[in-house]
Image (cartoon, rainbow, N blue to C red; front, side):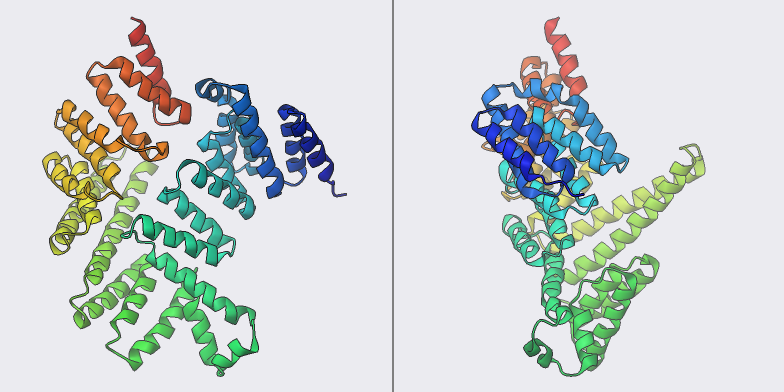
Length: 462
């Protein structure tokens, strides 16, 4: 027999009027036990948690420490796929500190695993709007959730938001897929007779439907390729369709088969339109993907031996070095051919950094830091590069430039961590502890933050 959750909602609302937030929270949780996908109840629960937290005047650090048990439970439950239990643990922790982003992220992912997409979308939207409206990673999570929920139109709007924040972001392919999916809905649902009359021939209609759909399996991709190849046969100089065929081969799960075909398509497209620099980039990405797969294969083989097989270790290291060398050479070409694209300078800088070529890395980050969209990351990496060269004072200067004027904590958390490490190295223990504590209050699970805070407190006591 279904339980009517309205009685719990009514009790909670009456408790809110009396400012008895603990009772309100209890009743909202009771309602959600019986109907975990109820957005209205969950939204009201969060509002009650926030009011209770705000009016209690509880210190953020203290609240985070008190929430450590539900945090651990939520993480363990989510990793063991006990998603319902994880969600309840998240709400227990958020009752203690409703600003714990780690619990909001965990709640969202577990809700999605259970198919509660509306809950996951609501929680992720809440996280985005409240803490970091320009966090591209969170927006991408939201795009994926909306896509899985069949809400393509809304997903496209968030893709457009990403393009506004970062015009060089590679979200274009996703936008095209979503737009095609939205268009194909007309055909798949048979929305109107007018839509059906656009293509009278059923064979052509089927082909258009397949061409416009998002290909989610290799069978769908191969069917789509066959249709696109017909277009190229009719118009051999259609290099854009050749690129689309290459992109579809690129995404084939059977990459050994897809690699060769994608390379052929991109190469033909380049012959037709050599001035299109995006084709050269696609060819480079194809080689990088191939080398990454080879590297991962050697790493997996080595890991299976428990790290004991020396020969497998050598193969893994050789593959890794080859990948890194190719990435550097490829991005050096991109920077040379397209010097105005800041993201290429930034990516090349990170590859130089990984190779400990710190002077070269700094030179690239000095170019990319001029782009406000990646200035924080660029200054942060520049600081790390100076630290790698032993120039700690310059590292501190770069970290401070990165965080100057920034109000959204999520965007500068990593930078603050590196700044705190540099200040600790410089003997500025009190300043370092203050920064580490900020991170600790925000996310107790971040890196080695608990140890950092503990060690510095002991140093300062001495």
